[in-house]
Amino acid sequence: MLEHKTIKGESLNTFTTFPNAPITEAILDIRVDLPNDVSLETLEKIYDRDDIKKRFPVKKTRESYAGKVELSPSGKISAFPASGGPDGYFFQSPTEKKIVQVRLDGYTFNKLKPYKDWETLKSEAHELWDIYCQIVNPVNITRIALRYINRIEVPMPMKDFKEYIVTSPEIAPGLPQELSQFFMRLEVPKPDIQATAIISQTMKPITEDYRLPLILDIDVISEINTESEKEEIWNKLEQLREFKNEIFHKSTTEKAKELFK
Image 1: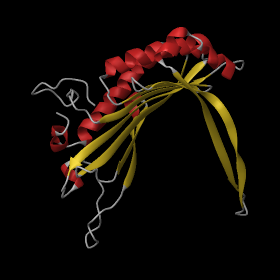
Image 2: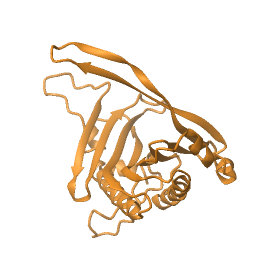
Image 3: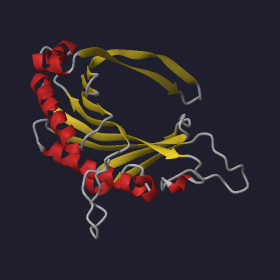
């Protein structure tokens, strides 16, 4: 998860590269405003490129739907049918565990396990973003985000979640202390880089080899407004990555980190 090498005595903003990092998916997302004449047919041109077809042999249509509920002053609730439809495409490489999303509202690069490192992810995401921009010519970039989903498989028995994760669920004293499921969602702003982290934690059923999967989902988001050709968004993504690293490092204990070595 963390891509800087730790040297004894250095500050905590320098982190370790783990050979068995628990990352199951890394996602880089860029939201945009497009010119009015851009359509699904325009997005099709991206897949018309031979290099894209070769690298991502599976193409699927992406669809998005949204419903609407209104509450009147009298308290009456009105529900409206969901609206929407196709808004882009998925290009997939099943062998390399990569997915590119090209949409009418932006671009996303997904890398499933195994994850190598940030530089590899950034390099390919940047290259594919440049191709997207060449075809659709975005007017503005409105939002950027990095999301890392981690699956930490804890050997059982375990007495307390705090053995592995610092921010953990607690049951009030006097109640039964066994927990069969939980979900936590925290929003942590970082004003100095104009970003917010959405940190979600949950658990999955115990595996056959008697391990409890703890999910640590870190989504770091920045709402911006800049022209697409500006390189500054990649500097901003570096800042989001550093914040993501800090969250992961400070949210997991040394006992948890031993599992990733």
